[in-house]
Length: 289
Image (cartoon, rainbow, N blue to C red):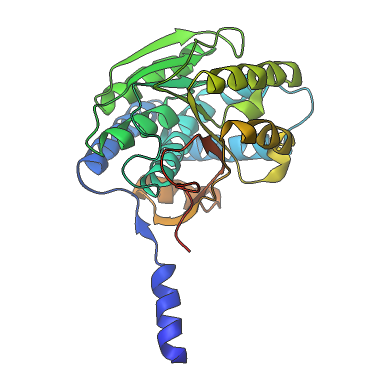
């Protein structure tokens, strides 16, 4: 009996493929294009330094630092975002939604990818929902960075998504949302200052009351989001939940190579999540026990 339990435990912790089928083909082509494009001007060691610099930037979180601006300073950091962190964010969102079955959010007409960065989170949400057989949602993306919006347009096109991008800041230029809209905030709220964050929370409460839904992801590390408990408590009455999300995967070879070079380990995908209201049972995005 002990041997059987041990074998079962080993099976449950086996890493999953990062993607399969048509979605994997599109993902590999997207990542391959980004690696080729950024590698024309940079060697691996320069991209590796960019990965390490970004990791240090978000861990240290110096007070008063404009994280969003610092994250795209220099070609090394930009390459690291496009070829390492964006793909990891795509995979994290995909596996979270895939764990919820066919329709965790019901019928989504439009994905609002706010603070979209490279578009990875919004594209993953739209592509994963479309993979259930539903019509692909249109994407409306907002970011303050021209570099980010350029990468986002490539991302949406790589997954065959109809998308429109806007340049602006949160919360002032956030588009209106209502029934049929899924608001995606992927690793973006932690970059806002307290005043902007408070305004965004108030705006989210209004659009959720109007029938929109929310998918918000942030790093697992608590210090990255000291505002988390306030947000979770404020959004819970509107049907927003905190699903658990942590999954071990076999990484794409390029990201595994960067990890080895940088001394990092991204084989476990995870995020703190606020999501809802979910269609169907409560806890629809929680992993099985």
